[in-house]
Length: 208
Image (cartoon, rainbow, N blue to C red; front, side):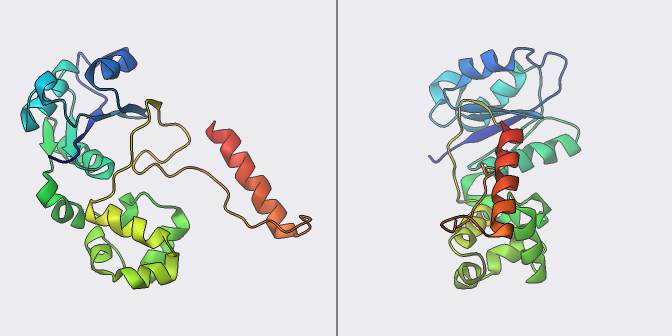
């Protein structure tokens, strides 16, 4: 049995007011999102029930919240989005079908920086299915090591660890954080580099 992530979307007449306490009572690994909560319910079968039963039980305890479950954060969030579009309930993506499930979604939902999504579109990539078909050596040539991470997200094989508490300052789908990547000259006397550093520091301050 692999990882099982559940995304509970805000909603339902009895949705917990104290969402933090609800999450703490369900699992030690969770994050609050702007539209609900992410819970890692791997290994909680004895507590909540196995498979679909456990995820459905938590949705009911959350006041009938709409939910999505899958082996990755991205799959769980997109599954809950799909369940919401169908009027509620829960949608569960199995580990063996996560790649096929993700394939139909546009790369708009990819947890990536805007410039990375733009570059993928320049390569003709429009959906997760397209990205799954791109050779990894090509992605590495274009994006460096980040290319492998994007490929893993598209295939549903990535798995970041949820951080207990709020998901502020990171992309809630993948854990991307607002940081400035820059190689500093010594002394720092390059105008564009200095501006990039200041912009990065400002973004991190806003995120906090």
